[in-house]
Image: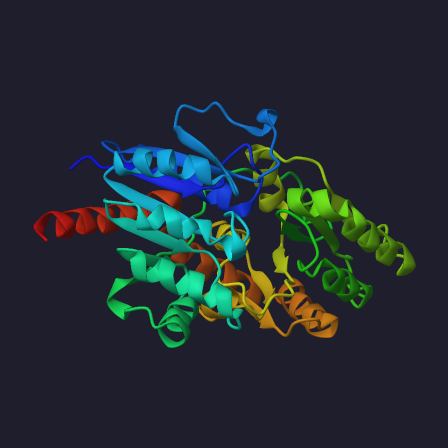
Length: 379
């Protein structure tokens, strides 16, 4: 059965995690054959024309707060077989993004709501928006069991309509980094950068690893998140630079803000000894970088956000407390100095990584969509 998927999401050329997620998932679904994917692209109210993409898969562009275009958006989605609505507070117009409710209420086709954040302590109105959205959906997808439990306990979502499907990751090409044996060990963090990423704690941890021989390097590869850049400029990155200079770590820590192609990132990943994710958030239900690190077969050190607690408990890394450079340093030291520990983490990551590759994840979305469409037809 060929399925026409209609996504609602931020989308390239917008640079954000959800845009990348949707683009990757849509491509993976198309690559399975038979199925087609289109998207209603969400943009900020003040976005200019140069920020619009002319990609053929874009059904409509919906500017936040532009209620006049909602009717055409709903009509375009109703010409599809199923709607896949990405949800994150901040990407829809209205109070707490309640514009999304107008979309889902107008649908005459089955819908899958993919929740990227499940707030532990929502405001009164955030709870109303989220509850109405999940109740209106045919199915709710989350990417961790922790998020699933919160949906049931805090938002009273019917357990039978919740599906835990992992965040996908690309298969990194088999790139050989030259002369790895002669290089200093590389600790790597990548992704869009902004306050809350906890990079400062990683920098502090490096100050505690000066005695290691050979001395490790810490590379933070990623541009500043566009929304952070818009509202705060490079204040966070500059604060990190000042910290590096204050600790005299300029030969140890590098902040690389250059755009990295897939090939360039693959070389970095192939060169890395360990991935560090020192995020501040205690509510982060999923991390694309964490999933990518696991599929690449790399040991991981991460703070105790829900996705890391679940995934690293499976023997692929070490979870540490938030805001604790001593704990981060100890975990890094363990992996860098004990080759048996590092090898065991890497082997386990490679063992479980295949289930997170985009083709596998896309097949699970297609299976869910097919079941919902058949159930709707039989009703």
